[in-house]
Structures are given as C-alpha cells and as structure tokens.
Length: 136
Image (cartoon, rainbow, N blue to C red; front, side):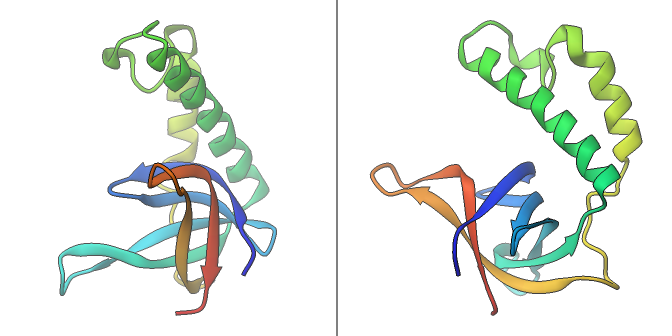
C-alpha cells in the first residue's frame, strides 16, 4: 500500500500507539492492539473513521502540543509546562475536556490492519509523518 499521512500521535510507547492517521485518504483513529501473550504491543491496529467534530478538536490540541514541543526543543520552556505553552494552557484544558476519552476505535465500526510507520533510513528513527497499512 502507499504511505498515508499520520495526523496525530496521542500515545507513544516504543512507537505510535494511539492517534489519527489517514486510511485510504480518510482520517481514522488508530489504536494499537496489545498482545497479552507477549506482554507487548505489536504492529497490529484497530482503525475507525473519526467524526469531523472530534477530528477538529484533536487537530487543534495536536497543534498546541507541536508548538510546545518546538519551544521545548529550543529550550524556551521546561518539561513542567508540558503539553502546552503557558498562554495556551487554558485552551488545551478545554480541548482535553471536550475530547474526553473519545480517541478510541469503535468496536462496531473498525478494521484490523497491520501498520508500518515511516522511518528515516539513515537514523532508524520514525519520521513522524507516514504509515503504510496492510491486511494482517
């Protein structure tokens, strides 16, 4: 399959675990499957379409985090201010409340896919922007 855009990473542990990415060009929530037999995450994900309303909220909050992360990398803020710049803290809290726990795949409307997130070959690091989906 062709690379798709990763729009957000709302949980990361040794790789993207939860967020929003395109599947066939349409924004979907992706949620990593936890393998209880190995006690680890694998490369399989449940993906569900995301509503326009939820997508707008999550993208706004993601933009707040991206600005914080850029400032953090420039040593302009400390980790204590995570995940928002001080002047954006109140809006982040509003968005957090509005989003709640809705960034989850829908058990009644989801696909099961294997993911290969894009990596920068020379560094071996995830590039943060792409994912390729395929059937398990």
